[in-house]
Image 1 (cartoon, each protein chain N blue to C red):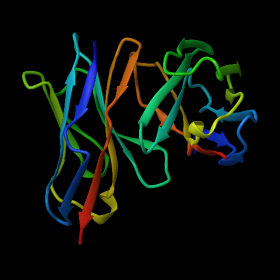
Image 2 (cartoon, rainbow over the protein chains, first blue to last red; image 1 turned 135 degrees about the vertical axis):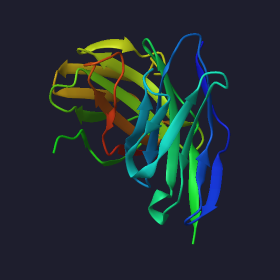
Image 3 (spheres, each protein chain N blue to C red; image 1 turned 30 degrees about the horizontal axis):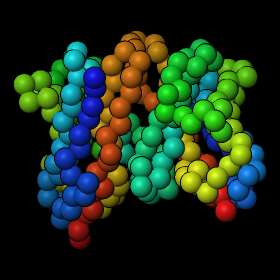
Image 4 (cartoon, chains in turn brown, yellow; image 1 turned 90 degrees about the vertical axis):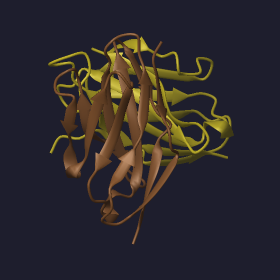
Length: 111
Length: 116
């Protein structure tokens, strides 16, 4: 069975400091992994995806994530937070015809 | 600029009424998803279609919800009868299977449903 756990429901960082949003997954086989972002009153937008190619995946808006099979993790990072990064972030795992969304992490950016 | 469209954007109705939400996927996409988002439950996958055939609707309450794709350009989600607990934002997303089992999902702006 597949599952995905986003370890923090809220994360607050100061503008200009690094961002780390944590995601752990459980899958019997090699999954596909995604990060989506949802800005207030908007639909979700893909940030990046991992589909068994390079383990370090670069996405839009300066975000990247590293697939670590040994740790079953797919954490999302950004070197320097911007006010416009304030949003909710979802980690997603898919395998065959199953799609599992994490509960989401709300990122707050402090001025 | 291809995008998923959803109508209506907002819907207020009374308990017991039928509600129909519509989605136009991006032209050429062969997979359509319906999600429900609430503060309490977060984002839930209700159902999805591939090539207009339902692939998984295990997340959808069968007694009152139904999802269909009458043609490749229209997906519908119906609630009959509606209940206050159905109040949520309903998102439609579409995607393409080209290049692998799953690729990016493109989300619509959502339909905000309020059932009084």
